[in-house]
Image (cartoon, rainbow, N blue to C red):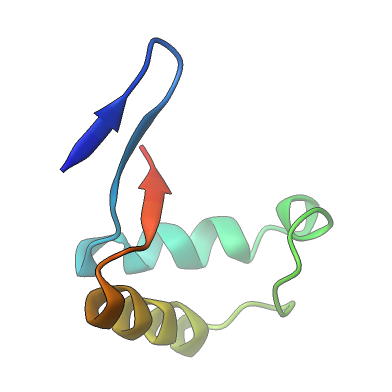
Length: 62
């Protein structure tokens, strides 16, 4: 499922998003505004993937 407006597009998180999640969450500037561990490790992104896959309710902006 994809939810889309003129300015934003959301879809469920997929396993193929792990590398992109790792990259953005490991950005120091991004991390100033989002309460995530820093540095963000690949294992953190993989945990998010497991949670999102299990719950099927995690959205990601695309």
